[in-house]
Image (tube, rainbow, N blue to C red; front, side):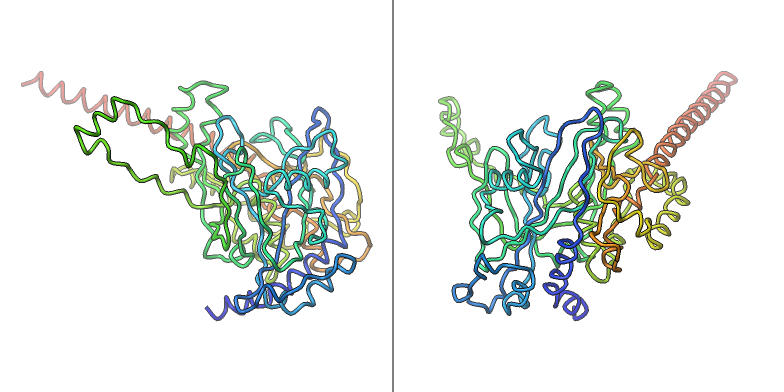
Length: 449
């Protein structure tokens, strides 16, 4: 417990240094590749909650004309406070690729948006009612932009642009959730996002995406053979939560006359069952890919080490994937430790995607995050310092850490799945032959008698 306290005691000071580096070293703009025009932006909103012994009413935020990172983090209540990140949980909606996911506020860019930053500001206001262009907020910088494709990279969907914002007021902002899109919003302590104890796994039904292209039979066979995909996740423990309420949540539907009669005749029919407990909040997939690179900039710079490789639930398939990807995972780990890019390549300020854009420095496909329906693929030189001097912290943030680890991993996973299917087929044939022989022997013994 003491080690954990010492590790997070000065988290606000560490946050200030990370945000300063981000502000001094913005990420390059990534244009849309050919055939794709869609762009989206998300907002990573950070605030500092004053310590429990602080009287919030007595605290004052810095005047808007004097707001800067040095002045903000020099305040006593900030030094002793707890940094938090805002997450939303989207409503469950049929046909939505990210239905029910925990995510960052944001959405697709509209034609009237001035730029990607404007999209992040507008979407955050529309979804949670938080004004990121107010005097109480500092726009820090953007994080590395990513090209989003369907699983295994068959089709480019959009470019996603994350932006970091700092809420400077000691008072918690009042959120107004859009009930048609957002189910809830949560302020999550940054310390819990860095805690190894809250790392877990998220199971996703990979066969769902096959039903639309191959039909329900292929979906059933796929689920029976390869099970579900298992992804690295973080269990979120909110410090403050907001929930959207719509009329159907608080107004009960009219009771039919038949049910009224049955409830009078049979008391059990009138008994109301308790609503099911909500599932735990878990951060995974694309949003975790964005957060992983951000969290890895905090000492001791090992947040990505807590991340685990995606796999499947059957034990024999897990073993085949482990053996098939072992050499690639070891090579990627060495690349991450040694530094994937030189300062000269990092200093590039623009990126122009081409037919070979979705390639890492090794020439293999470079997936920075993936769930059961989408993947985020990085481009070369994803981080561009404004000077030729690259500090250790800047160099560490200059590459998609998760993307480096996943470089070529899914190509090996495809091969492993093929080996697994041949293995299962051979196992089934061998079992069928064994059964047939025993039935034949039993029949001969019965006939001889």
